[in-house]
Length: 527
Image (cartoon, rainbow, N blue to C red; front, side, top):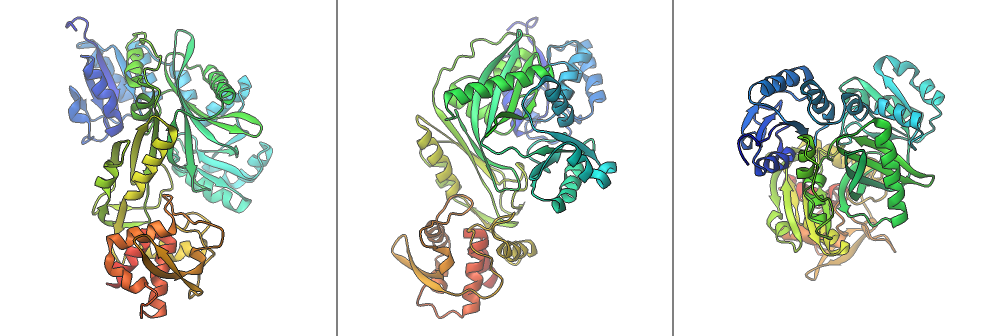
């Protein structure tokens, strides 16, 4: 590419998830200027130039972009996996660059504005009410006047990653949920919405030349109610073709209602008993690993590269798939505590069909049971010819990984105690048994892999039911793995053990609450 043809692009964000865009733009021979509020952003060194500018600060961004344009030129502005499409649009407008209009980007960033546009255009979406801190005293009345019945959903009006997002089942839960939602909102606004029953899908598209080009449809796997924790996604979806077409049609209606016209668009769409409904639509590529990893793995289309082309006014080349594979992303999580050791990463990487492993929690790190999608401990991506093979590989790799927690930590003790009192509530017990408040009873002998026997509470082997932990391990699988990691526990757990009942109970309470982690934690605390 000649010097006169070389593009110069400003990329907002220089974290790990923006690295794909930085590298893709550089591979095109473009000059990449990156900004991020974190001066030590991990991908900052990969840009040709980096400036520590908060991507929430639109005025500072516009001033910097205008300076760039006047001193060397600027052909585009872009972000990926951030919730700041409005910052991108503000810069594009100030510098007369290609992109969604600022008005449409604001519509796609603020959920109250979004719902109003959908309602005006007749786009299927839930009833809603926007509530600020000053409204809390009359929140019940506002919810009733909006025609919203329980259960309902409360979330921040302007955040991503399921931060502050929770299902509210009764009136007494509404005020705490609203307080959390408002605290997680940059504008101090929570939105209350009708609860939408049914499976959820993530959909990607590029919008240009007056058309919407569908580029991906994936199944989202949402777990641990009343929170909305995405434990993974699978692409492509296995939803019937007719439903997929209806999902796309409603998505297009939503894009038109918001006014998105040039750039990326992503949606979270629900297929409810009453039909397709829009969860939300954003004027950007999706967050997480979808647009940068699983979509190109499954289809062969470099979606980030195509979106970058749009950002500088180039019409993308063919968006037809060159591959027809299945990509499955799954996450692993932890009970609260501090990590003393991480086991199984190499075994997970060696699992057939696993393409990538992205651990985020290491020795010495503090971890929590996730309340949102940024508190998980890592993700694995698997790619295969069939859905069954890709999903099984991703889930098996996650089951290989165990975070051992430091002993005698107050947060871990509290998790075990409180979780066992209400094992079906949030956060859930690893093995959801009946509530436990006193001594355990009714012990039985169970044979586990490698011809070993353990003496465990009968409620862990209920007749006709197979209990599984957060990662899908059975009781037998979890016990076998725990003993592989710490063989010295076998003596305390075996039927022939002389360990006193109260100590045996401690082991099993840890296991019920936190699975492998809980069993190892109790053992290490006793030792």
